[in-house]
Image (cartoon, rainbow, N blue to C red; front, top):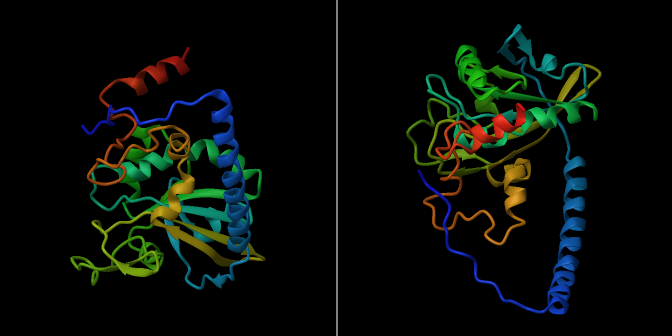
Amino acid sequence: MTTATTEKPAAKIVSPADWLAARKALLAKEKEFTRLRDDLSRQRREMPWEKVEKKYKFEGPKGTETLADLFDGRSQLVIYHFMFGPGWKEGCPSCSFLADSFDAAAIHMAHRDTTLAVVSRAPLAEIESFKKRMEWRFHWVSSFGTDFNHDFQVSASEEEKGKDKVYYNYAQTSFPSDERPGASVFFNKDGQIYHSYSTYARGLDILLPTYNFLDLTPKGRDEDSLPHTMAWVRHHDRYSDGKMIEIKNLAAR
């Protein structure tokens, strides 16, 4: 199992007055970043929309569902494209890393007229088995046998399989799996569904609360020595040190 490095980060030790001066200098940059992020979010909201012409259908716990059904009566829908292909023994660990926060987020999103749903290409029975193991409750449906995943760049077509380059994140690039992560946003206006936004790769960082916490620390994500980012990530029931068990036991008290 890959573990975090134990080397302590080098730090300059200063007086409280010097520390405060350094903190205020960084705060000015943080405020600038916040303003830039707010402006980027505004531009994202102002993106043009495209009509969704295909009548996509999915298999969910209650049977066949259309894309419109996934809105669950709200006007906005965020879909997370979870890497879980047909025949896989389990879902992607990195996608699971994100999904651990979905149940908590979904209830709050619902009170802002937004539904969160998860879509994978694995058949529903495989999804349901893994979902039960992970103790998740969010709405997760199967796009097996449809064009949905390929249309939104998150599954390789038969023609793409085995090729060095595939179309992902709006460019030809290398990706080591036939399934890929992403998030797509839709709006339902008077029964017509529109696609307003999709993001992939590092664009998904904003959905990772664990990374946001780690980015506050001296060691940060601590991934520079790893073969690839997220190489340390495990399904939350696969960490060997028992910490998840301890957390669950504490919550049960």
